[in-house]
Image (cartoon, rainbow, N blue to C red; front, side, top):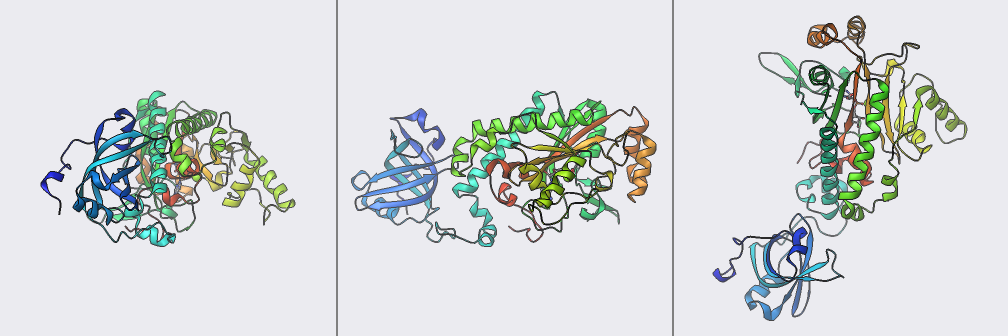
Length: 447
Ligand code: 4AD
Ligand code: MG
């Protein structure tokens, strides 16, 4: 129990990342106990408040004996408010320490499940709601925030209008094999969106340059380190744009994101032990590689023994293929002109070689693989109708989309970037499940 004189929890408080503004002053900090060291008459509780971690110093004779005993026994993640003076200390991680004059315990905790010892991934994923508090997860999600912020600033400053797309949709955008079906009303089926692109195309004809940014869903039966069933995608779309415009927008955006992450998240990149030279190398222009050329590269790789199987022209790249192609370059690489057969129905074709789609995938280095997919869209009504039939899509669900080819159809294009793949790459982490607060995967919808 705390006594009245200790009640400081209702005082105005300062955040740990603002301590430099309060050097020498008395502040109240509100947070949770991250760690506790003690040496007889002195306690060194480390307090975290979401903005940072600071070491506090509690001298036995500075507070009441009862409070000293209570603090001494606190376990990790106890809810704790401290009052004390901010002292600069060049040896302290954030540059400051707090000389505590008072404290209040809001909740004592003694059995926090995540301890400094190593835990298995399954255990940590089961405790994701708590795992988020750890230093590394915190760093990853701060980087994610900066990626999102950079993306928004980039498009907003470049004259794009935010036009979000619906999540319940009547038809597939990216092939029927990864659709999540839901019961809509009165027996009607709906699907969770795989991509906002088709709606973006309508928006682009209305606003010129648009982007949508929201959750997208894929019933991916693959259990890889790059696949989630629910992920966030940013998708720009531009009227009067070609494949070349889409490629130059992609490289400009990625270079901008890298600069922002380097500038704003240097502390977090340190926590993650990220080799920042890899991010400094994300500079436009990126190499552009025709699919034919990429196939040659893969076949040479096979002959050199760097790949297990011989890649045949016409196929889509697997993860090892993407990794091999990107290993040939020092920055992201844009592979374009894929065979139309491996791409979605809406892709425009190369007029010289109609079997090729005017599509591009941006492959990130270090094995991160495809982070962006996009290209130029087919503008011809007849062609799109044919493709809808060929892909066995229900034409009635696409009538509105066909209208875009009936009324003022122009060359246009755009791309989609998965926020989680981009964040994993920026952070240099193994698996994208750590880049979203609560990941959804083939075998996981909890917590
Ligand atoms: O290549 P995708 O499927 O392209 C589209 O959906 C287009 N309609 C986008 C557009 O042109 N507007 O997906 C785009 C990106 C991928 O490059 C990848 O970054 C991410 O979305 N992505 C996934 N991220 C996590 N988990 C998954 N299952 C993903 N599938 C795609
Ligand atoms: Mg793709």
